[in-house]
Image (cartoon, rainbow, N blue to C red; front, side):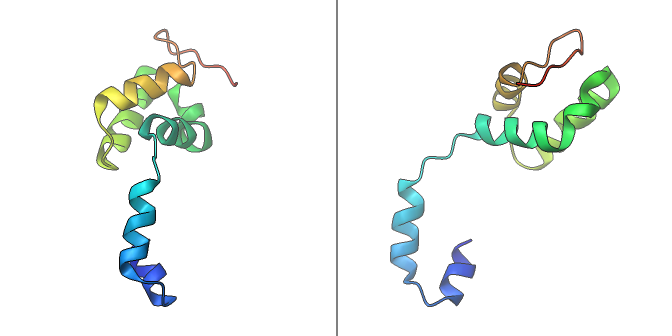
Length: 83
């Protein structure tokens, strides 16, 4: 993101200042990813493990993933609901 903004002639220091002020909640990000891409894949344990692994490869921590699964109402019995 920083590089793209620099290409538009925005000052690097200003970019970093703004990005540091923005608080991004990883749990909300993960929940959004789950709802948009993985929700249908969470119906069985094998695909749930694959989804968790994919999120970890994206750099998310296990604790944040676990919290997001709870926030998105993904039940331990592998049932899911839409909010």
